[in-house]
Image (cartoon, rainbow, N blue to C red; front, side, top):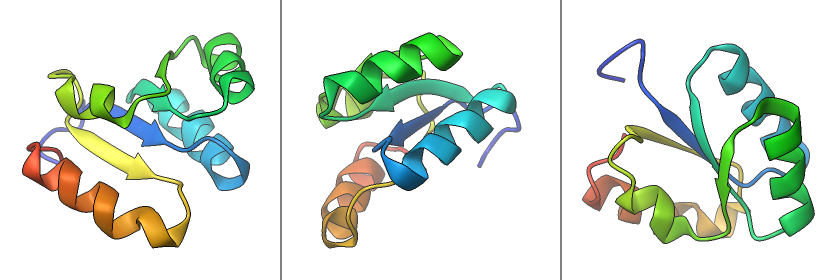
Length: 90
């Protein structure tokens, strides 16, 4: 990452994603949580006060977000990483 103060979006907040959300929040780097499940988004809002969205496009369009962390099924990694990199995210 370009900066120790980089803002991160965690995409996927299920089993492993919950740990990532918690750890990036503890580091003060969490900017946004993206997940399709409304209950998981509500939990992220309640637990760490994170901004949330069900739309990956919101992650890509947010100029505050410098890096994207994926906790989605492996079959989706290429698609999401490619989109993130083309959007200027790390």
